[in-house]
Length: 327
Image 1 (cartoon, rainbow, N blue to C red):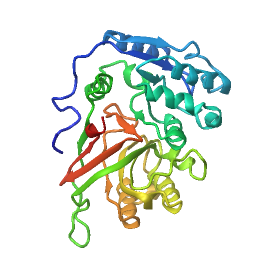
Image 2: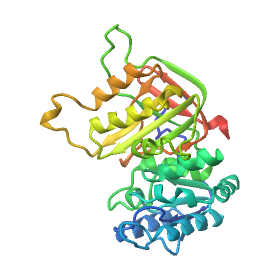
Image 3: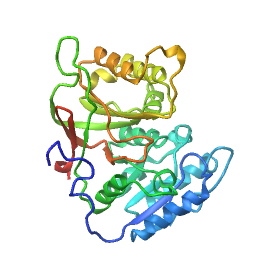
Image 4: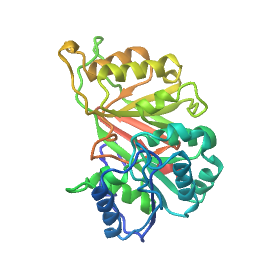
């Protein structure tokens, strides 16, 4: 597969048997019940067997049940024997229960073939699982926001989910934006080939919040991917600075930025924008900083194996993360 293939390449979407998908709520309470029902109906229409956790719609203040309820839901998901454990939604809630998770049970389920899929607040769980067990989880959709939309579901996201379910997912390719050359005339992003590195990351706020805790994996020579929503560029820069000063960024072979959206620039910014943050980051670390990865709080998202060995190639504006050799 060349770097010119995009996530909607012809390989996406294989015929496969129905899969067992377990839906649970480890974070915020589900407020959009119609989206929840639509998401389940969509998965069923695709031929899958959907099992809904008994407390998936529980409510305790802003959370999907109290801490003990949400921990029990995670452990039920791990014990379900499902092919995929898919979160209903993100929000906030996993950080406060990380010490209570039975990581051995989660790793055992992953070892038996279960894929834990989610994003946003779920990044805390993914980082903790990687730090504690070295097991791979998947950064990908959530039930309500992605599969439960009122209109059409994004076809690239669906094809990538199908690839995961059928065991055919091999990589994600994308095109980076055209950027001005550097002051010395060199390309903003040089051509890159990284043969093998651990892919990890997810939501920037969640990763930054785990610095100094036992739940942030120590990944040497990794490829760190990051996204966020509703965070102004100066806040994005501030969190990146935290990772920089904590020594996290210096250990990476590449930093890959996904989608940063849902914020508004202010008059005070006077031209300071997300590209300003990217430009600054490139002056701080030797590793290449790539942009526009199709992942984040946006409809079009690829699925990424958090904790897996991947290769990364960049030719011009074409980038490809590849993990097909890892199977």
